[in-house]
Length: 143
Image (cartoon, rainbow, N blue to C red; front, side):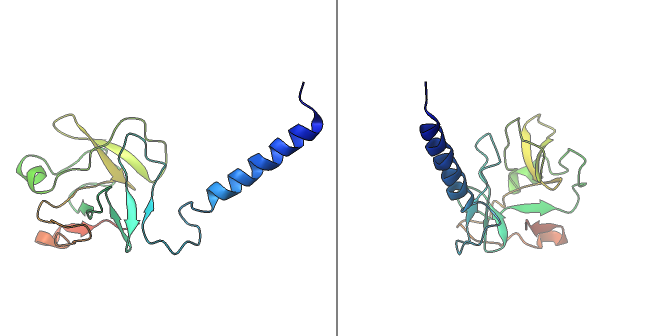
């Protein structure tokens, strides 16, 4: 049987751990400019770096103007997807800013606020943004 004193200590420790864990949560006042999003299951790591969304390697993510927000589909397939590789996703995304869209090849793609996310094949280094504005329809993804 656990005494009240031990229960009180456990409750206090649990509260301290919860507060410590919240200190690094997105939206907290941290000077770190790159914050991982832990609410995205399936290994699709997305972070915010210098005001843009980036993947786990720090590569800039983009949106396509021809994708219809909230449609659940991608308008970039075939050669378009070769130039603009979709950010893969796994099933089980909880409701929120991130969701999943189905692609023509039946693969799953991560979307942010209803817009599918892509990489640009010509970006070769983390932080590069050479795809912004390509053909007037590609945009850097921003939170």
